[in-house]
Image (cartoon, rainbow, N blue to C red; front, side, top):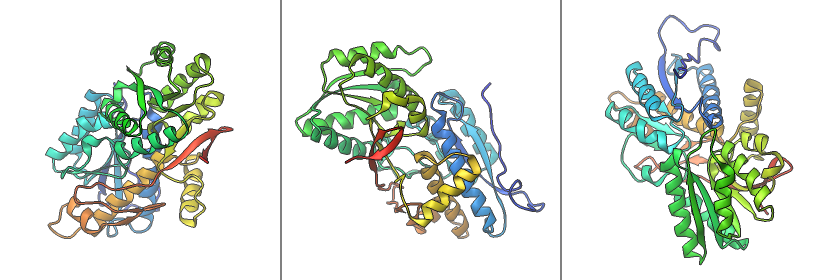
Length: 365
């Protein structure tokens, strides 16, 4: 049985919680699957935001607790975990972190009338809908267009793609937008190789199919662990071809696992790692002190998502839903940029393109 987590994120950090039970918000993300780095980093960001909120007085003097559930990147687990959050009566939910899990979770939370905000969802399937789900991230269309422009400008006009079908809602959406963007620029996807991420996935065979199409670039729409392994095979089979990966893989795990094989890899970030502003430096230092590691994109986005939800709860008027409060109190000041939602709960987010150089994410020239 998959682990379930429950955290009351106040009593451990305040001198006294008082006897009154805290208001609770929910968290749901992949904490035990092959791409658990994204979910765990997001959880850390939410914990830090909640600790700061409670230290500042909480919800009108009351502490806010956190109920955490793992979706394990598994539809059955995700359904069970979502229903547990509904039964727990949480005031709002942060998550999920992948589109495949959102397909399962969002209808359950919507039926229960629970406000939900995702730090990382980008699939066009969740864009432009008047529902209970708000998104902190930009869309696959925005990201794919920017990638296509940069890669074509670099001379890549015939690009082979591998994509993970375990997160099909995201990866297929990304591939379709990328293909359309390339065609507008006179370039194309040479071959698209689907696969399912598992411990025994034959990454060598996947890359062989990509290389057989005689591309001038390789691209991976996959999580960090798979991108590291695909890059390893790419360096063996086609060491001279440039490689790139979608934003899903832009975690600390990619650099740690990939080592030399991911050197030169093109990848975008939805935050500025080198931001010198006092606001971000304070957050980054506090995150490192709390978790003994520096924040990644999921941490930053999740902190921003928690800021939105906690502000909406604090500013909610009598008789007002959390969604109504979230829209009325719009826009929000995030860690690095203003978060300005439209009526559908969509927003625009800046991105920063990087290459991995000497084990670091370095801004592209």
